[in-house]
Structure formats: structure tokens, C-alpha cells
Amino acid sequence: MKLYVAPGPNSYRVRIFMAEKGISLPLVELDYGKREHKSPEFLKLNSLGQVPVLVLDDGTVITESVAICRYLEAVHPTPPLFGSDPASQGKIEMWNRRMENEVFATIGNVTLHTDEFFKERVIQVPAFAEAQKRMIPGKWAWLDREMSDGRPYLAGDEFSIADISGMVTLWLSEVFSYEVPADLPHVQRWNARLRRRPSWNA
Ligand SMILES: N[C@@H](CCC(=O)N[C@@H](CS)C(=O)NCC(=O)O)C(=O)O
Image (cartoon, rainbow, N blue to C red; front, top):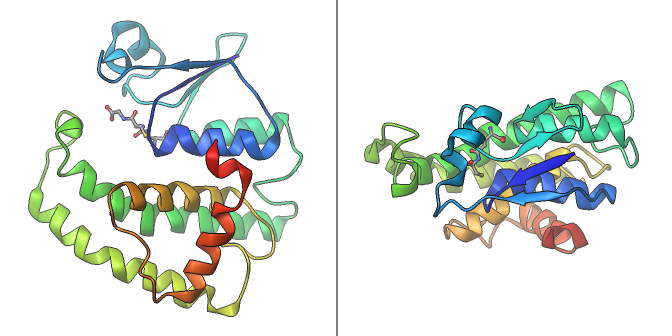
């Protein structure tokens, strides 16, 4: 088995997931500078030219970071990170999607629509980036209201893939200086709790 990675939130998500499960896999680290992610050999694995990509021993290729995590969960069920019963599975899926669609995507869109690196990936619309940027504080404020019930993790009492998506979102927001506003106590409490996990340094 081989995991193709490069710097960025989606490889980081799988690395955190592996650290939480105690899984170690041979890594192939791609160099964006050399455009290894757009090489003909790599495009045969992922036609989108994106990482992460997992290649199984029988040649099966799995792309998409959450899909890779799902595969790893099936092979290494303990500790469960996608939920341990139908209700927790539903809540975790719900919060993973909310974290990705509401918060991660808003921050990511600013980068996608402004950074030179993504010029060939999307038609960049600077006005859209500006609008998304203005929405970021409201997204964190929404999350703060949601977490004002005092729950330790996004989907409840269990740490899960939803929090891992939260970790990569927090990391991304720090890299691009869109940090969580200091006056949001519930998100800040969750933020501090996640940063204390050893997997933060994966
Ligand atoms: N939905 C994909 C997104 C993958 C993705 O966007 N990866 C970034 C790195 S974090 C990448 O490969 N970017 C290179 C490019 O877009 O050309 C996933 O979850 O794996």
C-alpha cells in the first residue's frame, strides 16, 4: 500500500486520521514545485492531479481524503472515528459535511480564487473571494452558537472525523490569517482541545 501526499489540508486530514488510529503507511511525498502532481504517471492515478491518493497492494486506487479515511476506518475499526452506532454515525456525517461545506469551503474558496497556484484549477473570480472572505467571521460565529451547549466535540462526546476536518480548517485558517475570533469562547475551547492532541503534529 502507498499513500501519495503533499503539503495542504487534504493530505493533512489523512495524516491526522492515521495518527489517531496508530496507522503507518509508506508515503510518497510529491513536489508541487516540480509539478509531480500533474505528471502523466500521477494523472493515471488521479485524473484531477490532486493529493492524497491511496494505492492498495492489488492496484486499487482511492482518491478523496474522506474516502481514504473511510477505507482506513473499515480496515482499522478501532478507535471508531466515523461513529459507533447509527445515531453517532449520522451525527458525525452531518458535522463532517457541515464543517467542510460551511467553514472549510468558505476559507478554501478565498485561496482558490486568489492564489496563483490554483489558476489552472478554477476560473478565478476575485470578487467571489472577497465575498467569501467577508463571510468567514460569520461562519465561526455560527459554529460558536452551535457549540454553546458545552459539548466537547463537534458531533457530541466522541472525537471524530468531523473534528479532524475541523483541525485542518483551523490549520488552514491560521496559515491564511483568518483565525477564529478571540471572543468566541465555545469555538476557542474546542480549538484549544484539538491543538492538544498529539495528532495535531501529524
Ligand atoms: N476533495 C479532494 C481535494 C484534494 C485537493 O484539493 N488536494 C490539494 C492539496 S490539499 C491538491 O492536490 N492541490 C493541487 C491542485 O489542485 O492542483 C480531497 O478531499 O482529497
